[in-house]
Length: 172
Image (cartoon, rainbow, N blue to C red; front, side):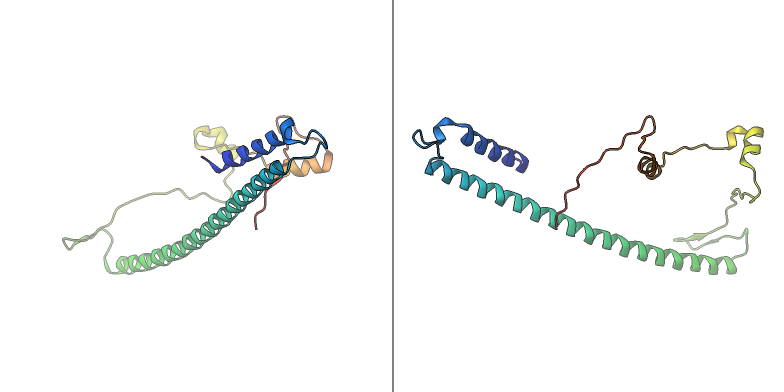
């Protein structure tokens, strides 16, 4: 049974006890002592379950932080190894003339031609698009922070947008 369902069931049991006419004294209208005990037990069970869930959340958050640190450590290691590899490659370029290849059986060093596009700072994309539209890529993206700022400034929400406020649970 999931913890969510357990919490729901406890809340349902409490509500059922409070709604039941049999839970109250016919003479005074007060909760019967055995019902009060059941409610205290259910309340403690609910409290224990919420505590356990909060503790598990903290455990997951700590584990997530450890993973983030490990990722950063591995990225730093990757960067260091990449720099070493590039340095060795640069040294090999200095000692093996272009066009020549060397084969050691387990490792082969050779040259391959490639090409890439370099754009000039004065490139006018609008003019290029008029001449060759297939060469220019368009992308549009909503600036969500700007929508919120616009709403704060004007009190208006742009057509097609919606601003939803929510409460975020903090566990610490």
